[in-house]
Length: 359
Image (cartoon, rainbow, N blue to C red; front, side):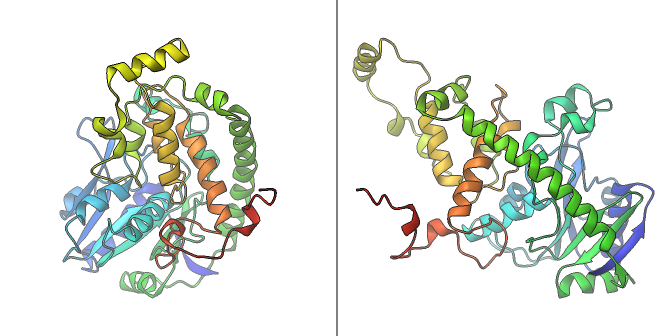
């Protein structure tokens, strides 16, 4: 496999120099990229047209408070853009973007994608408490440690940048990506075997962690009582829904009190039967409802767990349910923009292997 190897002193600076060259040559008109906030404590996605601002951006920050897919959804909410945009994203962000495009929430026209090998993101609490002192390996989201889609494979990007020690690997994934390289006087003629070996090693390590994590979650959530204990600390704030890049409904069933609340007398009857009921109600119904909606498109980013004020491992169970549901349909979210989401596809004859033959 051929690409371009570029020696760099610092990874983010090396990536930024590639972006700046594309901008300076007029190949792109604007950039959507993570950017440090003025207080220096966090990052947000910024639509950048000014070169001076672009020199300060951080393409691969240590945290991901919000997915870039949500930013792109807001940008294209009213239709296609009329300028050439380069969206700088982690693989999970692009995969979420592709899923949202299938749900008619993002218009991909005039948007090019630069994706980056993702080493994982630090849990936001760890970063905010110790922004310069956290031990990265101990502070990563567990969903990141279990992620096997961290590089270019099955990713419909235009140009992907791999990360090595003191070097980055530029790999064009289509004709547009090759034009990007030639436009900044680079030729994809270098052998990328060393990078592929690094990817394989990381995949093996993460797969082992993934299998161990998923088995732990299965054991913790076996049966309704166990599932209730898993979400016992839930305060029904719905923050996991708000930070999810796939959740997009403006009128959510669970946000409508007319749909999810009953009269006081009804609550009293339930209290009489159960000897007491907990408020707020419908905790488990909310999470089960979201699972049924999100499972096929869940990209395992872990934003839901990181956004939980009670630190419930929401991302882990959603990643498990998503992986198992996607396996049933041989579907991988974000793999192909033209591949329909199974929940939107009707087939009269399918899934016989899951039928109850004893009924």
